[in-house]
Amino acid sequence: MTLEIIWAVIMSFAIIMYVILDGFDLGIGILMPFVAEEFQRDLMISSIIPLWDGNETWLVFGAAVLYAAFPLAYSILLPALYTPIVLMLAALIFRGVTFEFRFKASQKRKLWDRCFSISSMLVAFLQGAILGTFVQGYGYQLPLQVSVFYWLTPFSIMTGVAVATGYALLGATWLIIKTERKLQNKMYLLAKYFLLAVSIFLIIVSLWTPAMEHEIALRWFSLPNLFYLAPLPIFTGIAIMLNFYFLQKKYEILPFLLSISLFIFSYIGFCISAWPYIVPRVLPFWQAAAPPTTLKFMLVGVCILLPLLIAYTSYAYWVFKGKIIHPEHHY
Image 1: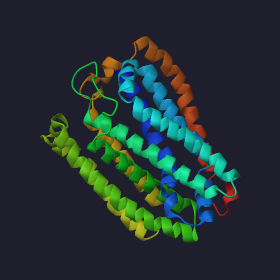
Image 2 (image 1 turned 30 degrees about the horizontal axis):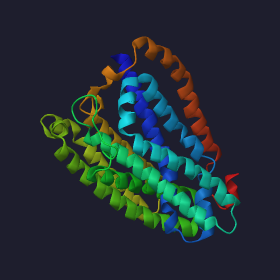
Image 3 (image 1 turned 180 degrees about the vertical axis):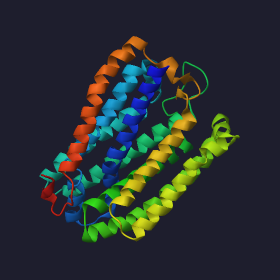
Image 4 (image 1 turned 30 degrees about the vertical axis):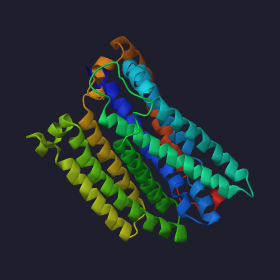
């Protein structure tokens, strides 16, 4: 089962990289309605222009890993989630269009800003709804019997709003690093509000999830698991309090790093709750994996591709580091 675990780790890594990197640029779109001045909106967009398309590479990589390494799970999950996935991809495509059109538009730039914001909100909400659908499960047997709107439940709507709120927090703390003066001060204020909202959503999810699924409740609250897993919510609470403190003291980099840590802690908690299933409560990941010979063959390619992807991402962020003073500085 070693190969299956390696591939599960690779897929999990790709997912969290996408959530963090594309999360903050989706968050910038979510924040657009809070900024009235066109010049400041231009600065916001310019802070992600060189990076946003590279960030989405991780989504493609994660989907490719699911398809190649866990084909059975892919064939089960995709049909059950066709509606939100197709809507999300359509919103991602339209969001890419708005990048180009807003810079070419002269009289209707505000319209394209609205389109950019709406598409960003929709992508973030749908990703959260997909996550909520995964957490709440699909039943207890195969084949899955789900309707077109199975993914649209009170829990998934809540997780959709929660993810969008978290992305807005990432976007605000990113802009704290990349901007200064008036726009930066506005982001400090917005980051506090979104951090408060994220904290509330974390509490709601932490209580709602075990109440909804008895197996998850046993995993988190039975002894001795309670003692083993207690550090995770404790560290999360500490990260939230430190984030509030550093935002109040107007640190620049630490709020962004602490916001990322909230996503990482939440993702670890999600993995603990879902383990060992790749289709919740139905299919363990080792039963969904491709044959060992296939996994070995693909692992050679990933050992070459993954370091290149990490190196490219790191280099891009290094080259475009520093503050955006003028919208044209993204060039």
